[in-house]
Image (cartoon, rainbow, N blue to C red; front, side, top):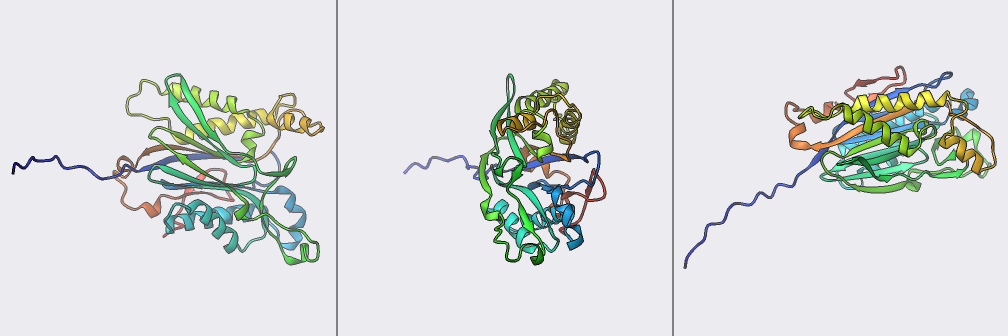
Length: 309
């Protein structure tokens, strides 16, 4: 018999990772209660509920709670595997938190070409893909609210505050779950509601296109994700001070027969993550456990941290 040689088949499955950056701005008065993390394999944002400040005498601190949720989510998602890592990370953070507070939360993790997302409340994400005419929105998250300006939230408070009250709290199991099929060059935006209360989707898209266009023609360069995050956060901050702007927050108030014109001053956090080939991204990097970046309570900028060491 004649044996025909066959070319070897490369069975290696292409795998993607994040190239991410973030920017966070504090509201004009009061503490910043937003928190975030990002790495090459996961990212998250949390928005501490400022109204919990009225219970500070009981040890309730929404800023510390949001920060702890992100710390615990980052730790879990990098120490586990499987397609439900995002949801399991949020559940683990809820169960293992020791501080008191309330916060919305979003966690996403990438496995191969799939990004799993778990989102509770009114923080959110946007999935963008480059086209010949600019960026196109493929998917956005849906807000989860009990009523106007009352989002779903994780809550941990001393028993003395709710004993015999009959109150039931939201939990991580109530979150919305998404599965995003990503391609190289896609862009994921994660944000707290300080962004989307002040900017419409089409305004976010236009601003991303403006920044991307600055880098056109620069072969091999992508827009630094931290630059995208900074531009979006600052644009939202400028709008938040406009007392006459027709913002999403103002429109939502009118639909509920309330009068809150203009922007909404709030903490604003944006994480921008490009989808890139994992093999390319790993060049020069030997220790994946050291690439986690956290937003701290003390600073509005990001810092490198060894939470997983």
